[in-house]
Length: 405
Image (cartoon, rainbow, N blue to C red; front, side):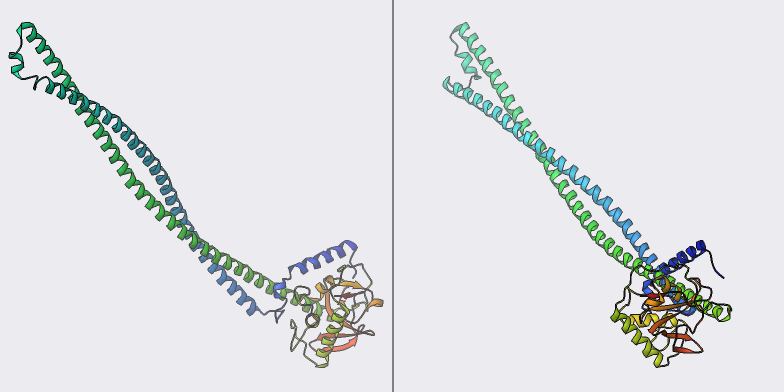
C-alpha cells in the first residue's frame, strides 16, 4: 500500500527523530540489542549514582551552610576590627592631645616655679622671712609699719596664688596624661584581641571554603557520572526498542504478500554528504566477505565478533574499516537509510548499502546489506539462512536507491 506525499514527509521526519535518539555512547558496545537484565543493571547503576550524588549534594549543602555561618562570623569580626581600629585612632588622638595639654600645663608649672623662685630671692634680699614678727616690730614709725604690713600681705597673696596655680597645673597635667595613657592602653589591648579574632575567623572561613570547593568538585563529578549512567540506561532501552522494531518488521515482511520486487521511487532523501572513501568501502566489503565465508551465525542484535544481524554486519564492517564513533554509529536498518546518501542503482559501487521494506516506507525497512558489485551483496540474512553472498534482487521489497556511507 502506498502512502501519500504528506505521510512520506512525516515518515522521514519520524526516522530522523529516531536517529537523533540513538546515543553515540552505546555505539561501541558489544551487544547493541541489550537484554532486560542488562537494562535492569543499568537502572541499578543509575540509581546508585543518583543516591551517591544526592548524598554528595547533602554534604555540600551542609558544608555551604557552615561556610555561610563562618562568613558571617568573619564579616562581623572584620567589622569589629575596623571599629577597634577607629577607636584606637581616637584614643591615640586623645593621648596626643593630652600630651600637648601636658606640655602646656608644664609650661604653666614652670612659670609658677619662676614666680615662686623670684619671691624667695626677694625675701632673701630683704632679710629673711617677710612674715617674721621681727619685720613688724622693727618698723620705723606708724607709716613704715603700715607699708610693711601692706607689702607683706601682697607678697603673701601672690605667693599663695602662684602656689595654687602651680599645684592645679600639675594635677591637671598628670590627670590628663594618665587618662589618655590608660584609654590608649585599653584600646591597644582591645584592638589586639579583635585582630586575633578576625584572624581566627578568616582562617576558619578559608579552611571551610576549601572543604566546600572539594565537596563541590565531588558533587560535580558524581552529577556527571549520574548523567552518563542515565544516558547509558536510556540508550540501552532505545537500542533494544530499535532492534525489536527491526526484528518485528522482518517478521511482518516474511508474512506480507504482494510486495514489489523494487519499490517505486517516492523521493525519500538521505544525507547530502558521504563520510567514506574508496579505500574505506573496499575494506568494509572485505570484512563482510570474510564473515560470510566463515559461515558465522545470524543472531538478533549481534555485531560480532562471532555472530551478526543485518545492521550489525554493516556496522562492524565499516567500523573495522575505520569509521568508528563518532563518524559512524550502530543503528537499525531504517536509520541507516536516513543516514546515508541516496545512490541510483546505476551508480552503485561495492560498499554501498541496499535496503528492503515490506511496504516501501522508510519506517518499515527491515533489512540492510552491503553491495558486493555485479548485482551481488554480502548480507546477514536470517536465523535460518545465516550469512550469505546473494543476488540483490533475491529479497522482495528493495528500496529504489542505495545508500553511500
